[in-house]
Image (cartoon, rainbow, N blue to C red):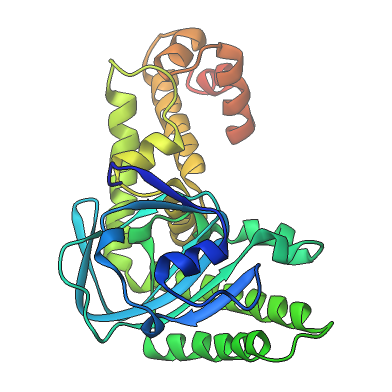
Length: 304
């Protein structure tokens, strides 16, 4: 992430003012096209935090951006999801193209108040992905999402009545469900890079357990940071490929190492637990039995 001052945007109205847009029609929701405003140079290379959800599809011919050490282009439709209080930033490395297009949908959490989506929106893990883990859409997928947004726009621009909020929230939930489907497609359509990540996960965990200078158990955060991937994206990717989350992969490798030590060394269970990063051998024994249905001592006895 780019290290600079974080700019907090507290309301949708403040975002509109920052972009030179008219005041939003509703204080808690806004929907507009990218082509209706111009990205000013003074907001480039800055880091932001919003107090609201930000969903967008962006197309920008010949425009390239930098996230970390990687460059990303917007020749095709790219979809971003930003949750409230999520820090993000994009470093522009080329001039923004005049043909920039797409849309932005912003929803304040209060708009969802007293609805099922207020609770369920936290289940959509892609809100916790990093900017470089955006959803790359096919033309057909983009058309599907644009059709849903068109329905939201009709409600947003129409006469507000007692049905407006529920209709918009219903359409929003449909938008999120399709996005979840398309992310699953992305995990599998980029199988080469996805399986490279899987291999790197295995290697990272293996190297951690083989390093005598490490202390404590490897965490999901450690593995994700080692691969320069957000923890939530990594777990979602691994679960789609293997059925196991990052934490479960760590446990699988831990049990593998434990079985190796129990069957090939004379170390005590306590010594093995300490070498694997446990502070208390009871915690190790409990996890081992939970994963294998037998205790470490019972496993060792099977080799005698």
